[in-house]
Every structure is written in C-alpha cells, then in structure tokens.
Length: 384
Image (tube, rainbow, N blue to C red; front, side, top):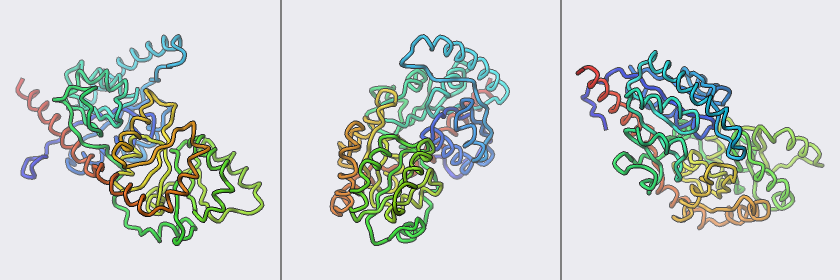
C-alpha cells in the first residue's frame, strides 16, 4: 500500500476494455479509486465504437475514445480476415492516442477492445497492468500477459495462465454504491411494492437479459404464483416487450412479482432478496460475495471457453453457491429456488461461505498498483 506520507504525484492513466457491463463496471471502479486516492491523476478510457462503454463511461464522468474494433468470429473463420485488418488499423490509431496522451501506465480490463491499445503500449515501453476477472483467463489477456508488468486476478490458481511473479490476487472491483447502501431489508422490499414477510427471490440476467432465465419463469408461472414466494424479475432490454405483452394477457396482475426491464437501483434489489438467480459473470459473482448473497448460478453457454461454468464451479467447490446447467434450467431452476429460499439453514451456509471469497477493497489495491507502476515509469523517464 502507498504510505500516507508519500507525495502524491500527478500521473496519466489509460484504461482500456469493455463490451459488457462485466468489463465496464470494474474499469470505472478502478478509475474512481485512482481519482479518490490520487486526485491529480488524469484518466483516459479507450473502448470499442458502438459498445456500451461509449455511453457508460462518459456518464461516470470520464473521457473515452472509441476504436473501430470487433471481436473474432469463432464460428465463421473467413470473416476474421477483415477483423485482422481492423486490428492493425486500431493498433495504429492506438499508437497515436498514446503519443498524444503520453500515459505513465496502461490498464487493460479484458475484452477485445483492450487488445490494440495494451499491445501498442507494451511495444512503446509503457508499463501495463491487466485485470483478469474470470477464473479462466480470456484470450486477449493471455496474449497481452507476456508484456504485462502486473496481472491482478480474482481467483486462486491463475498460475496456469500467467507468470506467477506477475500475479496479484485482488478480487474484482465492484460498484461502490452497492457497498454504501444503508437501506434495510424491509425498506428495500417495500420500495418494490412487495411484502417484507414473504421470502424473496431476485432473478437477474444482465442488462440485456437471459433467454433461459426468462423462459424458466414463463414455463413455471403457475408454480411460482402458488409457492408463497415473491420474485423480483429483471427481464433485460431485449426480452421486455415480449414479456410485457405476455403479462398483459393474464387475467389478473401478479401481486407476488416485481417486473422490470432494468433495475437502476440494484442495491435495493440485492437488499430485498433472500436468494438470487443469476448468470455466472465474474463481476456479478464478486458482488454476491461482497454482499454475502446466497445465489443459484446458471452459467451462460454462449461465452468464450465456457468461462462462466468455470466461475460457477469455483464457488460450488467451496459450497458457496448452487449451480444449474443452462440446458436443465427450465425444468429444474424454479423448483430448486423455491425449495432453497425456504431453507434457512442452507441460506445461512451459502451466505457464510460466499462471504469468505469477498475482496471488498479490490479497486483500492489495484489503484495502488497502477500508481506504483506509473511513478516507477516517471522516475525512469526523468533519469534518462
């Protein structure tokens, strides 16, 4: 950790990556920690044109430049010829960004958006730090790891992907607002129009939604209505219009259900929930750990290297979560959730075990590592 007596130098930091909330939220959290601890810092984000970081990062108060980059098509290899040309073009653009901004350190948070910028930073002698969020390292980070000075990880055993001497176990940064929430369970439940006396299950499939989770709800609707359990259901933007039409056709509005396209105050939903149903993205899992939330994980099968299943099993092995395969979710998920939320002993066990895997100061620790690399680089440059 940086000693309080040390003069806090002004540093310039580029943070690159994105594509999904799982990459963006940690990146913004790291930036926030850097600015809080080292106020004179300048931070520039670099992402992918047309992706959600181009909206979320400015909304958080930071400048971002978009690259015309896209990911490789794993199903149609011929399409990747044009992608290779885009990568080369983006590396050239990244070179110009680095020369103009003159960063003292570059941070990669994963995803193909970080590839060109971090690779060019390494070539130009800028120290790089990688943040790997998953238990199975992503392709981009594995390619960038050779030049990286420090690799911050969220799971044990990452030596199978990276050089041991470069690894620092920090956990994943999470949204600070979740940790700062002071609302009670009863207040949170009432704010959603539900009954504080009933057990509550939160179903969340990300900002875009998860088809399997939504189908599981619709196919088990009668069971849910008669279960005595109430539900908070974030459908996701993609599926909400269809689900809204379905609900409108019901004879009466369900009183045991809060339905929303997107829950802006997720801290309220988490506080209200006795049990969560979720995909197994690394960022979400880190939030469940920090908030001690019992969870049933349904890993998405549509991700690189099936890394969500590996994330889920890392918790299951420590009895810190329950797990349902995507292919079995429509049949098994809701019955398991209804049974689990009524089992106080199991909920307590899951809560205690998942809390052991929490790293609540991840953003601060990573910010200190970023600062150290930047100051070392500045001193080396001044000595030339």
